[in-house]
Length: 509
Image (tube, rainbow, N blue to C red):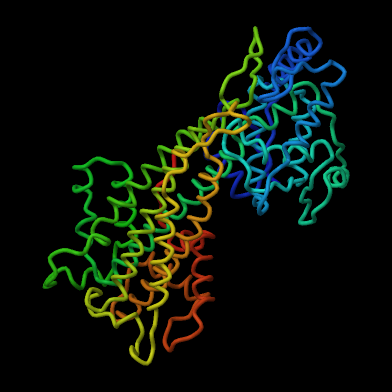
């Protein structure tokens, strides 16, 4: 397994994307240790003193005024973790939990959390040896940190909870022991350092971002195939048009589509004598829409890249004091997640219109109704298009902002929260919906191009159709279509179509 050496404050989105896609493990550079050790020493000193220091020798939240005896600090931290394990719902996917653990590792490495290096080593070893805590997905409001999900993650460190080890669910202590590790006893502030933070929300937002970017790249490829299927014009892709506007995403989207469509016989066949003056917006304005969505995702990526490197627990251990602040409030993550949601919705909305265009004989430039060779007897892709309309509408609903909602919690101590957790979590559902939409568009576009068999599409798009047909036959007579939709979605989400097209795509950075 690949291991990434991380320098907190300098971890790139590219590093995190590789960790996400490949499930690689990570560890902190040794240069982080002096600051970590110094902060841990300051916490030990505060725990032994008489002054009340929040989270070190006091209760939590509304109970912060309760002073805790020095002999009870370990029990205080253990009780904190156990009492906060109140998550509900399905288990977070393993790769997202591992990303969350990696983000917590980075946060600890900033040297402001006050945890011992022993805990960092345990976290690193769990990543390397494949011990992944089982974390329920629901229960965080995104301030004061992602308390419930991070508590479930931390429970395994103290021998509680459950963990996945090579596909087997084991009790926390047993999971650690199975790979030669032992639980730890949490010291002053250490439990709080684990659960105060935005790593759950940020991990889900990053996962949504990485998946959404792949979807956008797929949309460029598949929309190029749709352009050939309806014999659309490539004139709107000319670079001069996009240079006059100047948006990076738009310019790059047009450039990618030009490269994908270059050499298409279908395109060359109707340059002259085509009675159509303009294509519908879903064809003509693809760079302006998908490119704008890419720019929005890049803006969100900037925020998430900063957050991934941040120390977000509370209190924070500074050189001269241990201070309570509000870095645990996930408002930046919530805004970023809402931006990604808008981008996903719009990519799906314009893709769905391309599908509607291709199945409509009044608009598809001589393609048969619903892309079936014998319409009437066969319904073809009629209801596949309806399914995409349902998914498009669902994504529009899911794109409504989450960060604008708030409710007071913890006896009004935490009176404004970000709702970043479910704002980020819903991105995976939206990506799933979008992948189905793009999968159906792929089926329609390939079928449409194949109806123009006397003319060839471009070489990159021939490779896309070849990859599709390795798994899914052309639609002739009506058949049970649900497996086709699932297979097409898998080709999109799994990156097979991008590998097949072989054309350089715009990068997130």
